[in-house]
Length: 327
Image (cartoon, rainbow, N blue to C red; front, side):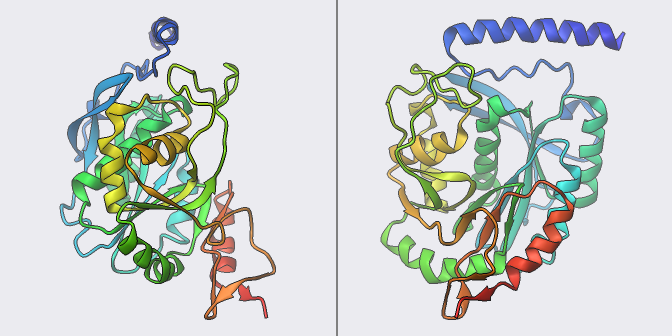
């Protein structure tokens, strides 16, 4: 029986792929006969609407069990993670997300899993930790923009009192105490000057990939310019709360595509008049050096990337926390 259902789902998914590809529209159909919401759990769900120039779709996101999740918080941190990355999430919980300082709210963001066993595991994980934002759209790269949209929408819906929002991928290690120091030292003054800000490692003069075989393919129908606006790497990006609100307001004015950092931190940020601040000294694409540049005895490097094994997190987090300054 399950084999027949699997074959039918595959056939239906192929039909949808061909029909949507011919229209150069994003594919949001999951091809799955089940959803998180089909299973008994204590999770409450909220129906939401996503609107881009090429997409109008209703789906559901999870509601926090604790309505005061962001009470007294000034920083909201979310981590984009795959459905099956259980060990990575545990590695993060046992490193930089352990013993979070007061004023920081933290969540992982996960889309719809594609098999029942994984769904049950994720629902059990949520019951145990309560630190997941779930949404019922298939979790894959082609629809990665759903993940970022869902996280930002969740923040604006349930956590809109914070001043700053930190977006991370799950292969990043960050010192959140050091981040708070640099927010106070640099981002707060920048925020007073530019209410709508984003900060991170900025990509300049990036060309859209026009080869349809590329995983980063963007059609001219979805983005016609030859260059993306400057945009912060999606691995680690710090927004002001006002920037997030303004970016979400602009989604009907842009077409969705899978390169979500170029979409949200570039195309939509430009439409929203967000000030893009390049701070590569704080957000490192790469590992630590033996000694690091510092200001006032505080290392500049705050986040490092990329780590793909759960066992990497605790050790490298300690190295990041205790890195020595260059004399």
